[in-house]
Image (cartoon, rainbow, N blue to C red; front, side, top):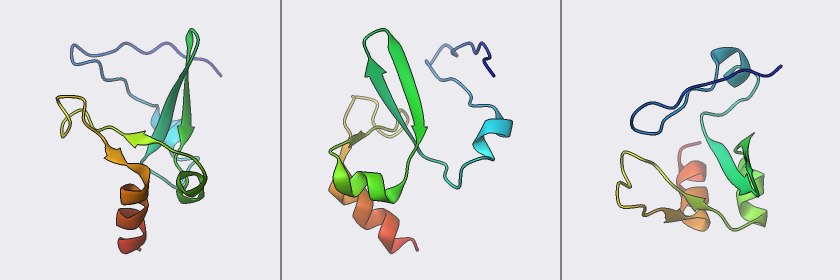
Length: 79
């Protein structure tokens, strides 16, 4: 199923709830591949295998992220 979403004035888009309910996470990986944006649910195991930068538009208004290994620690601490 394909849908068209419109970005807000702050550049945010909404993932439909019907799709979000299919995954046991509130975190997603967005990757640019040439002229495509790929959105995948974030799994803790993936963070341990790859290098990622975590970005939160509200927290990181200057484009700063946190290292993946720091996020892994935070995720495991919250279990």
